[in-house]
Image (cartoon, rainbow, N blue to C red; front, top):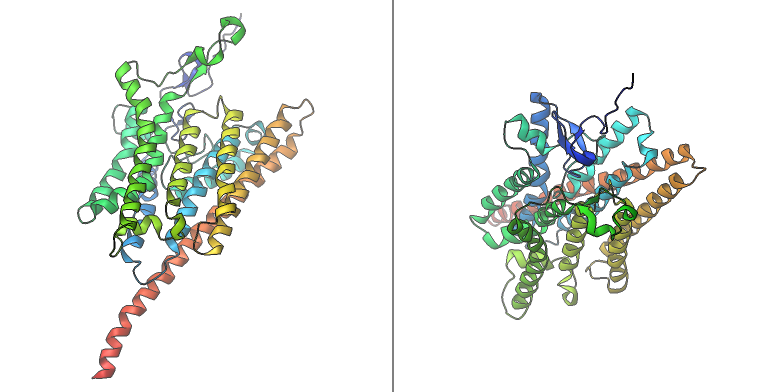
Length: 417
């Protein structure tokens, strides 16, 4: 008697196995990957706390630094900015790495440990999505929606991801509306725009030889709304986010540069780290994060891993060369730090590409691939962890400096008496 085999692995359903089965939810980083939902109170509380903390800490640290940096050259905002930019890159590299055979052949305990380390990158980048695949903590906004009996879809998870940032920005906007918009755009907009890239994910259900057409003309896009107006809105949102923010920042900085008087907090936030001739450099960093987010989400690593790596390499290389030539930061050590982080990211991308080439070869060395995959994740985790520690230490030192400065005037008054 013949035994029928299921076409899809556990947790997947529908044609081409792109949809999550009952009891599973799409991961935040990749809607084509599914994790088992754990409806326990502990799992739900842990997920909610992680999402809130991940969105809150970079936003409020950045806002606080912009409002309290007068009279002190604060280092924490620059460190935080570099940490977030590197966290975005590290998250995408790990997402690709978890799809390799070398990673999948690691011992289950090792995969779980490395997957949990991968969530450091999600926390470091602030904006964006949590989880690096099946081996992460299993953070899934779709699972949260199903736990509370709410409609679960890609659009619903997008709205859920947008709700906490809107609330945080609204709290700050009561007193500082322009600062709230500026910091919110820098911290949250890359992740928000990148989420629109998920609707554009496409894959071919037939080979080019069978269809006799170019591959991109036969792509199936299961997440793109059937309503033509909504689809056009998704395509339009991406250039609006890119161009609108760049034009807004550049005009605001130039207008303030042409007028006399103290800088407003939002302009100070955008320009404080850079030399006067490179005061618009924050736009380059913003474009880099936006490009990385859109590429990472629209070209799913499940189907487009090689193209994904190639574009990531190109974006980072196009950022490293101007940094090396222009040296836009006021302090030389920040130029060195930025160049080091970008170079490290380029090296790790090359290592991942080498790992993929090793797996494609007929005489693949699986043990060497396992070691290389482990080393890459540990390297990225150590760098992100050290930078997060430096941010916390620097914040504490700046707080001590401010407390000491507030105490000195009172001591001087007592001496006069």
